[in-house]
Length: 162
Image 1 (cartoon, one colour):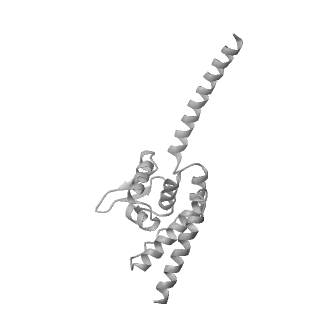
Image 2: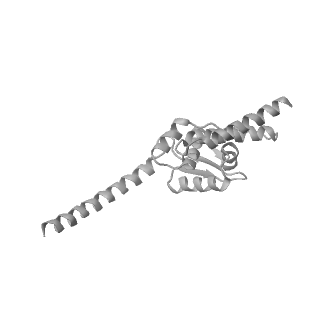
């Protein structure tokens, strides 16, 4: 009984810390949410799936402008051979629909694949070069932006010389 009380107290403390955490500190928020989710499962006698993720990968993706959920899903997938969406939901506490949208987002960018069966497993297609398709897409975007920039300069210079 004492252990249950301690877990409930710890959960309340983590929830207070989560409320205090500023919006920019996404890694701390994810960590606190995961801890709360695990304590919740312990209190309800549910199995706690163990899925590792690399915090460095997560922080770098966030720093590069990827959103919180896509970053976390990628970090989980990169660290594990394959993962079920339900396990991601259990570990992270992120809504299952959001996880599926994130997985679809990565699939559309040719970063993640899936093996369908009785339970669908998701995995990184090429762990040696996982973000190559996104890099190529960004290069094309930059080239397009440069061309647009040049046309703006041309328009501006013509307007100034007249």
